Length: 251
Image (cartoon, rainbow, N blue to C red; front, side, top):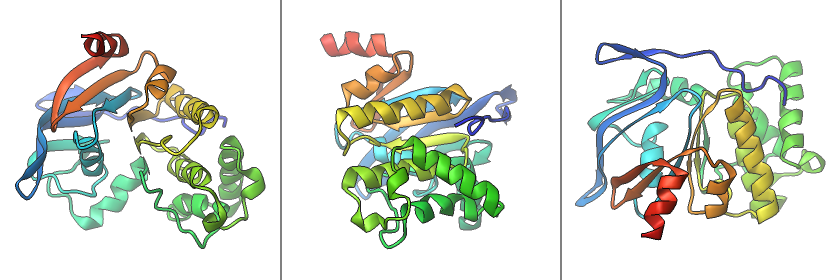
Protein backbone atom coordinates (compact mmCIF):
# COMPACT_ATOMS: atom_id res chain seq x y z
CA UNK A 1 0.00 0.00 0.00
CA UNK A 2 3.02 2.24 -0.37
CA UNK A 3 2.84 5.57 1.42
CA UNK A 4 -0.88 5.48 2.16
CA UNK A 5 -0.45 5.94 5.88
CA UNK A 6 2.41 8.44 5.99
CA UNK A 7 1.28 11.09 8.46
CA UNK A 8 2.65 14.40 9.65
CA UNK A 9 3.34 15.04 13.32
CA UNK A 10 0.45 16.72 15.11
CA UNK A 11 1.13 18.64 18.30
CA UNK A 12 -1.49 20.12 20.58
CA UNK A 13 -1.44 22.22 23.73
CA UNK A 14 -2.96 20.82 26.90
CA UNK A 15 -2.49 22.43 30.30
CA UNK A 16 0.48 24.50 29.15
CA UNK A 17 2.48 21.59 27.68
CA UNK A 18 3.07 20.72 24.02
CA UNK A 19 2.30 17.05 23.58
CA UNK A 20 2.63 14.78 20.56
CA UNK A 21 -0.63 12.99 21.07
CA UNK A 22 -3.68 11.95 19.15
CA UNK A 23 -6.22 11.61 21.97
CA UNK A 24 -6.55 13.25 25.36
CA UNK A 25 -9.43 12.19 27.63
CA UNK A 26 -9.83 13.77 31.06
CA UNK A 27 -12.44 12.55 33.57
CA UNK A 28 -14.91 11.57 30.87
CA UNK A 29 -18.31 10.25 31.96
CA UNK A 30 -21.49 9.43 30.04
CA UNK A 31 -24.94 8.27 31.09
CA UNK A 32 -28.00 6.87 29.35
CA UNK A 33 -30.64 8.01 31.79
CA UNK A 34 -29.90 6.42 35.17
CA UNK A 35 -27.29 4.09 33.66
CA UNK A 36 -23.70 5.35 33.65
CA UNK A 37 -21.88 3.77 30.69
CA UNK A 38 -18.61 5.60 31.43
CA UNK A 39 -17.40 6.80 34.81
CA UNK A 40 -14.49 9.21 35.19
CA UNK A 41 -12.33 7.90 32.31
CA UNK A 42 -8.89 9.50 31.81
CA UNK A 43 -6.11 8.50 29.39
CA UNK A 44 -3.95 9.81 26.57
CA UNK A 45 -3.03 8.19 23.27
CA UNK A 46 0.27 9.14 21.66
CA UNK A 47 0.68 9.63 17.94
CA UNK A 48 1.31 6.26 16.32
CA UNK A 49 0.24 4.28 19.39
CA UNK A 50 -1.77 1.04 19.12
CA UNK A 51 -4.35 0.63 21.89
CA UNK A 52 -6.74 -2.25 22.54
CA UNK A 53 -9.92 -1.71 24.54
CA UNK A 54 -11.04 -4.87 26.31
CA UNK A 55 -13.86 -5.69 28.71
CA UNK A 56 -17.10 -7.61 28.84
CA UNK A 57 -20.18 -6.57 26.86
CA UNK A 58 -21.55 -3.42 28.45
CA UNK A 59 -18.20 -2.36 29.92
CA UNK A 60 -18.28 0.92 27.96
CA UNK A 61 -16.04 0.22 24.95
CA UNK A 62 -18.53 1.18 22.25
CA UNK A 63 -19.74 4.24 24.16
CA UNK A 64 -16.16 5.50 24.47
CA UNK A 65 -15.49 5.02 20.76
CA UNK A 66 -18.77 6.74 19.83
CA UNK A 67 -17.76 9.76 21.88
CA UNK A 68 -14.34 9.91 20.24
CA UNK A 69 -15.80 10.14 16.73
CA UNK A 70 -18.51 12.62 17.67
CA UNK A 71 -21.58 10.36 17.65
CA UNK A 72 -22.22 11.07 21.35
CA UNK A 73 -21.67 14.48 22.98
CA UNK A 74 -18.92 15.21 25.49
CA UNK A 75 -20.64 17.04 28.35
CA UNK A 76 -18.93 15.60 31.45
CA UNK A 77 -15.15 15.76 31.39
CA UNK A 78 -12.96 16.81 28.47
CA UNK A 79 -11.75 15.15 25.29
CA UNK A 80 -9.55 16.16 22.37
CA UNK A 81 -9.00 14.09 19.21
CA UNK A 82 -6.33 15.10 16.70
CA UNK A 83 -6.34 18.66 18.01
CA UNK A 84 -10.15 19.01 17.89
CA UNK A 85 -11.93 19.75 21.17
CA UNK A 86 -14.98 17.49 21.47
CA UNK A 87 -16.69 19.36 24.28
CA UNK A 88 -19.94 20.76 22.90
CA UNK A 89 -18.76 19.97 19.37
CA UNK A 90 -20.98 21.69 16.83
CA UNK A 91 -22.59 19.51 14.16
CA UNK A 92 -20.97 21.60 11.43
CA UNK A 93 -17.53 20.66 12.80
CA UNK A 94 -18.14 16.90 12.84
CA UNK A 95 -17.12 16.48 9.15
CA UNK A 96 -13.74 18.02 10.03
CA UNK A 97 -13.31 15.40 12.77
CA UNK A 98 -14.37 12.56 10.48
CA UNK A 99 -11.74 13.58 7.92
CA UNK A 100 -9.09 12.82 10.52
CA UNK A 101 -10.68 9.71 12.03
CA UNK A 102 -11.47 6.46 10.23
CA UNK A 103 -14.21 4.40 11.91
CA UNK A 104 -15.04 0.70 11.59
CA UNK A 105 -18.52 0.19 13.02
CA UNK A 106 -19.91 -3.01 14.55
CA UNK A 107 -22.86 -2.89 12.14
CA UNK A 108 -20.79 -1.91 9.08
CA UNK A 109 -22.92 1.11 8.02
CA UNK A 110 -22.24 0.50 4.34
CA UNK A 111 -24.74 1.26 1.56
CA UNK A 112 -26.15 -2.13 0.46
CA UNK A 113 -27.36 -0.94 -2.97
CA UNK A 114 -23.98 0.52 -3.90
CA UNK A 115 -20.98 -1.44 -5.11
CA UNK A 116 -17.89 -2.29 -3.12
CA UNK A 117 -15.93 0.27 -5.14
CA UNK A 118 -18.53 2.99 -4.57
CA UNK A 119 -18.71 2.39 -0.82
CA UNK A 120 -14.95 2.64 -0.42
CA UNK A 121 -14.64 5.59 -2.82
CA UNK A 122 -17.15 7.71 -0.89
CA UNK A 123 -14.55 8.53 1.76
CA UNK A 124 -12.38 10.14 -0.94
CA UNK A 125 -15.16 11.72 -2.99
CA UNK A 126 -16.22 13.92 -0.06
CA UNK A 127 -12.64 15.22 0.04
CA UNK A 128 -12.71 16.15 -3.63
CA UNK A 129 -9.85 13.86 -4.64
CA UNK A 130 -9.16 13.82 -8.40
CA UNK A 131 -10.75 10.78 -10.05
CA UNK A 132 -7.47 9.29 -11.29
CA UNK A 133 -5.92 9.31 -7.84
CA UNK A 134 -9.16 8.13 -6.28
CA UNK A 135 -9.46 5.10 -8.52
CA UNK A 136 -5.86 4.06 -7.96
CA UNK A 137 -6.15 4.27 -4.19
CA UNK A 138 -9.53 2.52 -4.00
CA UNK A 139 -8.36 -0.35 -6.21
CA UNK A 140 -5.25 -0.80 -4.07
CA UNK A 141 -7.14 -1.03 -0.77
CA UNK A 142 -9.79 -3.36 -2.25
CA UNK A 143 -7.02 -5.60 -3.51
CA UNK A 144 -5.38 -5.55 -0.07
CA UNK A 145 -8.57 -6.82 1.63
CA UNK A 146 -9.03 -9.60 -0.94
CA UNK A 147 -12.19 -8.34 -2.66
CA UNK A 148 -10.78 -7.35 -6.03
CA UNK A 149 -13.09 -9.74 -7.90
CA UNK A 150 -16.13 -8.27 -6.10
CA UNK A 151 -15.31 -4.62 -6.78
CA UNK A 152 -18.47 -4.02 -8.78
CA UNK A 153 -20.81 -6.27 -6.84
CA UNK A 154 -23.43 -4.51 -4.75
CA UNK A 155 -22.78 -4.89 -1.04
CA UNK A 156 -26.17 -6.50 -0.42
CA UNK A 157 -24.84 -9.53 -2.32
CA UNK A 158 -21.84 -9.94 -0.02
CA UNK A 159 -21.53 -12.13 3.05
CA UNK A 160 -21.31 -10.52 6.48
CA UNK A 161 -17.57 -11.05 6.56
CA UNK A 162 -17.14 -9.47 3.13
CA UNK A 163 -19.23 -6.47 4.19
CA UNK A 164 -17.01 -6.05 7.22
CA UNK A 165 -13.97 -6.01 4.96
CA UNK A 166 -15.59 -3.24 2.90
CA UNK A 167 -16.15 -1.24 6.10
CA UNK A 168 -12.49 -1.68 7.06
CA UNK A 169 -11.32 -0.62 3.59
CA UNK A 170 -13.51 2.49 3.73
CA UNK A 171 -12.05 3.48 7.10
CA UNK A 172 -8.47 3.19 5.84
CA UNK A 173 -8.59 4.48 2.28
CA UNK A 174 -8.31 8.17 3.19
CA UNK A 175 -5.18 7.68 5.33
CA UNK A 176 -6.76 8.76 8.62
CA UNK A 177 -4.61 9.98 11.49
CA UNK A 178 -6.60 7.77 13.86
CA UNK A 179 -8.54 4.55 13.28
CA UNK A 180 -11.31 3.62 15.72
CA UNK A 181 -12.39 0.01 15.27
CA UNK A 182 -15.24 -1.60 17.21
CA UNK A 183 -14.81 -5.40 17.10
CA UNK A 184 -13.61 -5.18 13.46
CA UNK A 185 -12.95 -8.92 13.10
CA UNK A 186 -15.98 -10.19 14.98
CA UNK A 187 -17.62 -11.75 11.91
CA UNK A 188 -14.48 -13.13 10.27
CA UNK A 189 -12.77 -16.50 10.35
CA UNK A 190 -9.34 -16.81 11.89
CA UNK A 191 -7.39 -16.72 8.59
CA UNK A 192 -9.10 -13.54 7.40
CA UNK A 193 -8.79 -12.03 10.87
CA UNK A 194 -5.02 -12.54 10.76
CA UNK A 195 -4.82 -11.04 7.26
CA UNK A 196 -6.78 -7.92 8.20
CA UNK A 197 -4.81 -7.46 11.41
CA UNK A 198 -1.69 -7.35 9.24
CA UNK A 199 -3.28 -4.46 7.31
CA UNK A 200 -4.06 -2.62 10.55
CA UNK A 201 -0.47 -3.19 11.65
CA UNK A 202 0.89 -1.88 8.35
CA UNK A 203 -1.02 1.38 8.75
CA UNK A 204 0.19 1.56 12.33
CA UNK A 205 3.79 1.05 11.17
CA UNK A 206 3.49 4.15 8.97
CA UNK A 207 2.27 6.26 11.90
CA UNK A 208 -1.49 5.81 12.13
CA UNK A 209 -2.84 5.69 15.68
CA UNK A 210 -5.27 2.84 16.36
CA UNK A 211 -7.85 2.23 19.06
CA UNK A 212 -9.48 -1.19 18.67
CA UNK A 213 -12.16 -2.74 20.86
CA UNK A 214 -12.00 -6.52 20.93
CA UNK A 215 -12.93 -9.60 22.93
CA UNK A 216 -10.53 -11.82 20.98
CA UNK A 217 -7.35 -13.11 22.56
CA UNK A 218 -6.13 -14.05 19.07
CA UNK A 219 -6.47 -10.42 17.97
CA UNK A 220 -4.57 -9.24 21.05
CA UNK A 221 -1.74 -11.63 20.23
CA UNK A 222 -1.37 -10.03 16.78
CA UNK A 223 0.09 -6.87 18.33
CA UNK A 224 2.05 -8.14 21.34
CA UNK A 225 3.52 -4.75 22.23
CA UNK A 226 0.20 -2.91 22.07
CA UNK A 227 -1.16 -1.06 25.05
CA UNK A 228 -4.32 -2.51 26.59
CA UNK A 229 -6.98 -0.61 28.55
CA UNK A 230 -9.38 -2.94 30.27
CA UNK A 231 -12.79 -1.45 31.04
CA UNK A 232 -15.04 -2.79 33.76
CA UNK A 233 -18.47 -1.34 34.53
CA UNK A 234 -17.59 1.91 32.78
CA UNK A 235 -14.28 2.46 34.57
CA UNK A 236 -10.65 1.78 33.64
CA UNK A 237 -9.72 -1.36 35.56
CA UNK A 238 -6.18 -1.54 34.15
CA UNK A 239 -3.96 0.24 31.65
CA UNK A 240 -0.75 -1.41 30.46
CA UNK A 241 0.92 -3.87 28.12
CA UNK A 242 -0.28 -7.34 27.19
CA UNK A 243 2.01 -8.99 29.76
CA UNK A 244 0.30 -7.07 32.55
CA UNK A 245 -3.12 -8.06 31.19
CA UNK A 246 -2.17 -11.75 31.14
CA UNK A 247 -0.93 -11.53 34.74
CA UNK A 248 -4.27 -10.05 35.82
CA UNK A 249 -6.23 -12.69 33.92
CA UNK A 250 -4.21 -15.43 35.67
CA UNK A 251 -5.09 -14.14 39.13
